[in-house]
Amino acid sequence: MFSLPKLLTLAVIIAVVWYGFKLVGTLDKRRKEAERRRAAAEDGTATKPRIDAEDLVPCPKCGTYVTPGAEHDCADRA
Image 1 (spheres, rainbow, N blue to C red):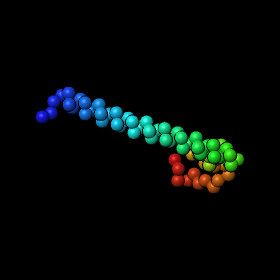
Image 2 (spheres, helix red, strand yellow):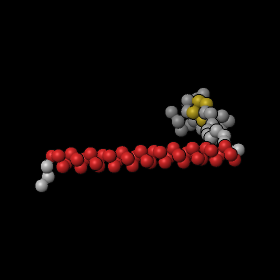
Image 3 (cartoon, rainbow, N blue to C red):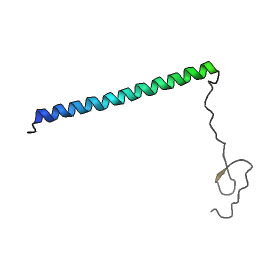
Image 4 (cartoon, rainbow, N blue to C red):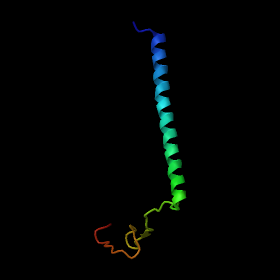
């Protein structure tokens, strides 16, 4: 019923289908990204993505990093 050549052939077919779908997904993702960039360049909205981040400074008393000028209570910290 099950022979080694049949099982190996089935495994190869499954691997080809699996990696084929992965390849198609990757190519589609790249195509959509390129299309998005092209559309953004045409609209004039092509800028670097903005990262919402703040620089932190260490508290001189406890060493915890906080935003500059923020209210910070060191009483509960070791």
